[in-house]
Amino acid sequence: MVLPAKRRRGRSRGQQARRHLRGVDEAVDTADQPGKLVLVVDDEHAVRNVLSLHLTQAGYRVETAADAFEALALAAADPRPEAVLLDLQMPGPDGWHLLKRFPGIPVVVVTGAGLTPEWAASEGCAGFLRKPVSREALLAEVRRVVGE
Image (cartoon, rainbow, N blue to C red; front, side, top):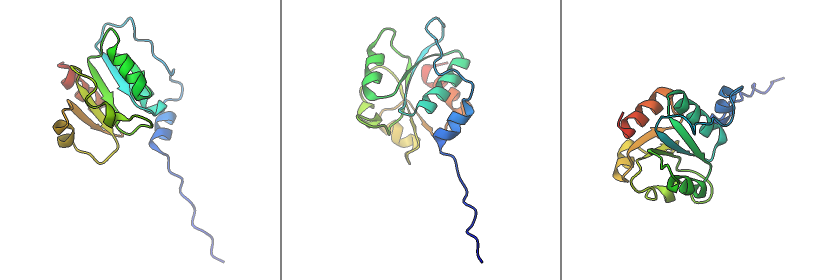
């Protein structure tokens, strides 16, 4: 008798991020913090939380948006963000539709798609991060883009 091979169950990036976030509050209130404001746009709840956590721990204020409509409203509000971290693959109007919709605000593309930093630069983006994003890469790119 041949037994079937043991099925290996992998975790998606979202599951890995959710596992990493156990015990972390969903929202971090940064309204009274003096750091620069960064807008994180991603449809995945866990990704928004992880990026926000890393940024707030580094002294940045963070606003998050789960879709294009929320992102545009937050980018137009006062105070305006110093940078936008933008996921390209979202339901509805996605990041591709938003690339040129943040005049005067540097946009860092954060994606798992097979794109390159050269592509991002050719599209006028200030930076590029490939998912999954390490804390070190995230902070280095944000510091570079906001001029720190």
